[in-house]
Image 1 (cartoon, rainbow, N blue to C red):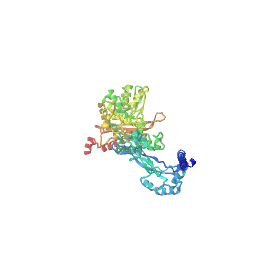
Image 2 (image 1 turned 90 degrees about the vertical axis):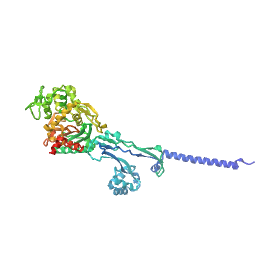
Image 3 (image 1 turned 45 degrees about the horizontal axis):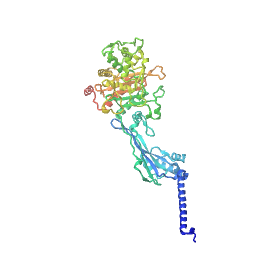
Image 4 (image 1 turned 135 degrees about the vertical axis):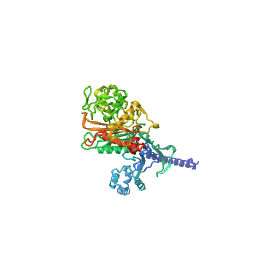
Length: 580
């Protein structure tokens, strides 16, 4: 009988089983090795491994900031930085690489080599934060796998530092840090896109799934109310006067009273050696565009430029008639019923209520202010928007400084009527003065074009009749009063000067010989198109210090140039004079 174990079929079965077991062991071993390499790959493999999946970012463009005529104030472009992979660079000769880069890109070979050698295990070290367009082309032609380019956004300001503190600045991540860049950051910021793909070992794209692509969404452009031409006119004229009178600084605002649109706003500091209590801003030392906008943040004592507000409201209430003769003094200070001495720059004797405003008589303002109740005086201040923010939207806006109702007394009453014991921001002053250029209503100040060209009315301060009357008398200020040095030869202006003593920071009263000089005016008189306020901080008294002499001509020149630029015809009477 034959042994079945030696049969051919049995041997084939045994061999098959052996082969199956062997294959299973090999497959299991291979699978085990794959698992090990996946879970805990050796360092040598990690250094050369290439991911089969990769993703790249499509950078979203930040929106542009445009002026009212769509001229670019700020825009972003795509730029490139140059980086090196020191780990790969050290596989060759870093010195040769540094020399090649320095020769082709005009860099310092020592600095390049130092960056490469400083961290040999790093995988990404920036050599040039931003390449010029010509450098980009050269860098792309360099055939070295340790060198690469990184895309980035570059924010550019075509007009340089013009309006710098107003426009603001972006950070490294292209986020707004100050000014308009910060205020409109949400609208300006886009959403970057993303692309994921499958690659082979040579990093060649094999497959891109539609679900793996997310397109970028660029930020929106923002149109502003600012006119870059008027901004330039105002800034340059302000700078000129600050230097001429050796002032600590200055501020200027140009407003369209019909719409409330801000057409220009500038804030300049002028550090002077040897002067105490200098206007300062530490943030500007970090970057000029990071400085606070003092037109919005820093209140000042307005002095006589505040008188038209009290004068008009007292007139509206019938507390004094334009032609009424008041017992203003002829040669010495007026003494109030509670014993306060009120001084005038010049003593004119008994004068009309109109003359009080034209000649800027403190005594007349004090006399009539005491005819108002404390509540009525506080209402006069409130009606023109003082004591509260304009809500224009710029960061750091303050409400000014106003004595509280419980601390208000007759001394405060007379002081406020002359523009003392109150501090206002330039923004508040410009907004309130718009009431005289309009029908007595206060417009919301805007940094973007008014919708439909119409103003948003905040409140009614005075009647149209009182507004027109006050504007007419402010016109006489330019021809007969404290505004004569600022009289225009082209347009009929209406305005008011102010010269307030500079308060001491320690709270111990005022400097006797240092001032805040200001002037505010609108034009043309009959159909106002613009309102301009100029504040000069602490001018050198040895040169000049009166608001009508320093700030007045600045306002006049800005009005003349801006109105001509806007195509506003000169006032008829001046045209007639010119024709003769």
